[in-house]
Picture 1: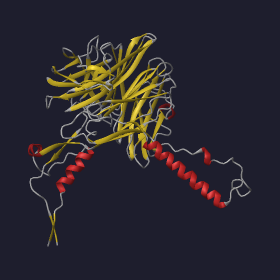
Picture 2: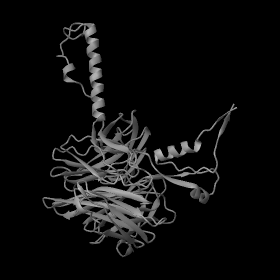
Picture 3: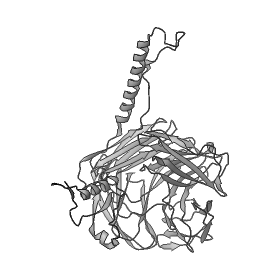
Picture 4: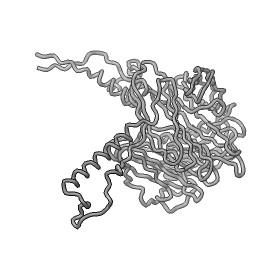
Length: 530
């Protein structure tokens, strides 16, 4: 009898650590027992996708990459961001277009034609491999941010992969400054992991808006997606929104106004991927109010938090959508520095099922830090939400978007921060929380620094950041929730004034999911084989 031991538990642990999404539970075991037996391991592979930054010749784009140091992850592995491959043909292989009567190029025999075709195919394949292999940005060791730049309208969408010690908590920021024209201002987006469903409340097909949904496919086969639009009266008829094909390793910007002839100020976009997976983000460009990226809202839920509305906001517009047929009744509150308050005249919000509802909250923060907290009334249906924020006055206004986001359960990071242009907002809607914030070394040098804050229940604080000593370049901020079980929400605001116009962009900090819980084995599992 031969005894073959199959390391089933080891295989399970490896699978969970690679995906970063699996949490395995023993069937019918109590939750407490599972938690006691679980080991927390760093994920071993992470993918991120960045949309093409801008169609403006005046665009200046900076990419910043960072992986926080994770216990047990080690320093081995690698991470790269590279342009989505593009097919190209070597001009040397092209003919002059002249042919004989049978269609063969002048002077070419059948053998010559076959050889030329093969050479052209080989060259195109080599070009594709070269484009795919050349990294746009190669991150340094965990704990140290690295930056890269591109300019003009030719910046490509990027596909990134991190492995080993570079994977847990890997984050990439794409920040673009456009000095003039449609969508001028500061545009920022955190590059996202591929997924199969996205919600974007706050888009528009109004005459003064030019909104694009960018879909990026990281995989070797084509992805197929549907784009659905929902307005104030429900579903909006679209002409070509179903069955959109996104080729392998490519990105497709889809102009929303080409999907429907209806002009609506407030819409919700639902991206549903039938086959494959994609990264998705909306670029919203306004003729008068500048432009920015709108990241996807967190999944539909009864309670939502929109953190970090700038204290000098001159206009805040809340957009909410209720998927399905059930209506939602929401209580609207502002988490201010002193506690939860109700905006005057906006105590509740009724959202009809399958419809988008928008409400103007004006200068709701009134010069203080603030976050919106939406809670259900009478068993309300789940919703998605985002706000559009305007700063400045008259012809010197700028806009940005903040989607509802998930909490920092354990840790989250954000990059591209400067010594004087960064605001970090922290809010704890349901209980007092302790939060540790670490500023990394800069991209060009400096010494990391940390500080711990106490965030009172129902409050929002714009905290004084621990800027690295001897900072050169930009740095990363890592937020750790030290109060297990108490939700903490966070966002970062970057500012850059150009010609008196207060450019800004806001990124939320959902948990980085850098670790995964995997049950430990109580006994060795073996298979006996004769």
